Image 1 (cartoon, rainbow, N blue to C red):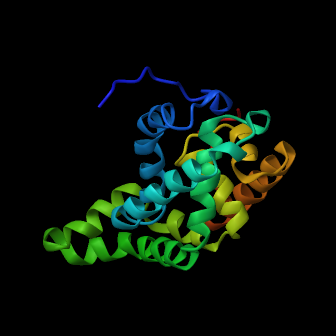
Image 2 (image 1 turned 90 degrees about the horizontal axis):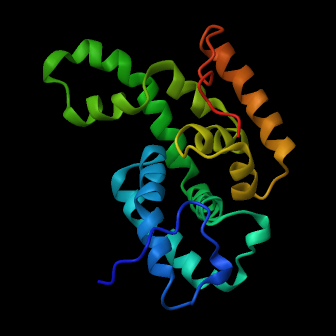
Amino acid sequence: MIAHPDPGPQAGIGEWSPHEDFGRVFDAHFAEIHRYIARRLDAQTADDLAADTFLIAFRDRDRFDPARGGIRPWLYGIATNLLAGHRRNEVRRWKTLSRTEAADDQEGPEGPVTTRLAARQVTGRLAGALAGLAKRDRDVVLLLALGGLSHAEVAAALGIPYGTVASRLNRARRQLRKALGDANPLKEAHDG
């Protein structure tokens, strides 16, 4: 395999040689996209959806418009659209994780390893609160929190105006705060 220089998170796709440079984009972003999907669903589904994300990106690489944003938000947008097809599984997972905290207390040290591993990612009331959000609001929260995207990158990923990202995040914060007893679960979310 030929070693490619790191294109960085904002590498220009418009300069792609369709057969040579896509490998750089894949190498630079696959693990990040896979991790984002796995946090929202599960590792096995993430394997398939991350591969599909890059298959779609490769197939549609000539339609990429660098004026709308960088490669990273474009890939997250593709992944988020693919996740939409798995929305019921995602909501079911958040609801299951919301019950994990209580189940762990009752099971003791013999509890299933998978339950404890999942609980480390997101547990208790936060998972339940996330499951209760509208899909559009949950996508914004999770792109910020799990994907580490800036507000501008979320806007590009979802194809929505920057101000819409802020309003959806504000609405989600209010709903999450209410579900969590006035705690601010997104205090650390960055404003990019």
